[in-house]
Image 1 (spheres, rainbow, N blue to C red):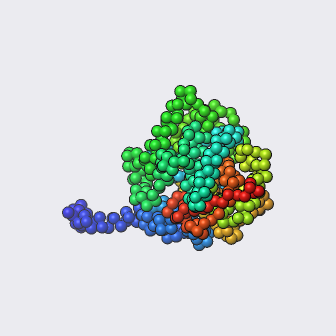
Image 2: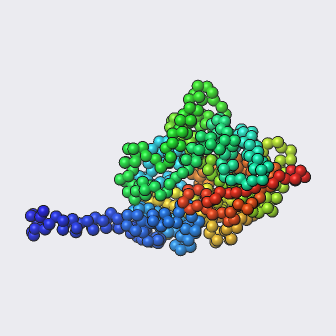
Image 3: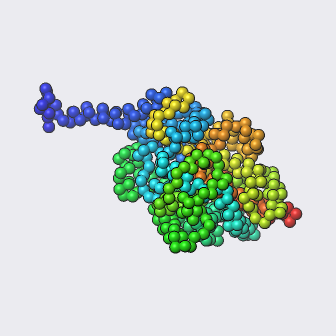
Length: 519
């Protein structure tokens, strides 16, 4: 076929051959100049895929990759997810602007078009944006007050006693145990009981449906080709995935928890209410109890609107999956660190014995009177942060020092790189709880430690998680000395393909019964 209207007849094929390279340049190559125009350096991207090939090779949870990025390119550099530029920022002054001072410009977690409108995930607090997020956050926040946490003391201790019993069973057999399996069952029981009034027996039954489906919820596959297509062609893939109600979270797990939580809501509406987080969330818009809420939280305590059914179910599900993994993981790694550092374990136990001398239950006041245990947990959170990175998006143009960030630009805060930066943390591979004494914390920039994020959009369940894991750790250390065994990996080999810190061979530890005089 020839184009006769041109001065010289030219075959259509020739025209296409001339036009396609131009279109390819405009679509696949020209966008890759965005960071360079901003004066930001970074690893060289490839057309269409950007730096996704490097991300896939390095892994999602990679201390080395994040640390090398900061070392090579500095505290501000750029990468591309497909054609979309991302800024990797670890400069503490800029982080203060992003998380606190200019929070109103960086309130959301993902750019427009990069999140799927699929329920229940789209109604989770982590996915909500702008006023929608602010309303749900301010409505749920009172459920995590100190007063509410105090009501959960007895249930937490009861679940901790089961954990101690499980560890005792392995001790009697002279066997090691998979620490994460036991702490995961403990956190499942605690959240089910304190959150929703459900008696789940996962500590006695590892095949309990709650445990099975929680594990499914975290079986996220970063090699999923649909995920990479979505990263490369978000505007094309988003409507297709939403049309088919496609989610990157396991559908069986989502359906299981959605059905369970719907049933709990129906029971509560029929008058079978209890004092737990589910009931508090259902009634939160009528709750004036904001005692002990951090000052940063009150910044979002504005107009409250009743939550929809989808809001309650989605965020109840979020509390379950977020609380299970992060708390169980931190408990397991803390026990590992204490097993490797017996002098620290002895000091924690001495502190515990003093605080618990006249107490039967590890209560709210008790866990707040154990500063050295808190230091050990904080150092563990630095070494094995439950989040590899934190995302924020610029809702409008923002100026950070020398850098002007355009609207809708994605910001990635490399938490692992910050936590292992030798300039901020000398000998970062070593477990040194004394980094978190009051004096040392005052010397350090608060944005050098970010396991729970920072500012008004930090982790809402942080206080629940910290109390829960400290109750469990206290109960265990009151009765047993935790030690390593011949099957303990030293050091641990962390799987880079996982979303959370996951040792290749688990955390195998052993327990020794304390002598009567040490109890």
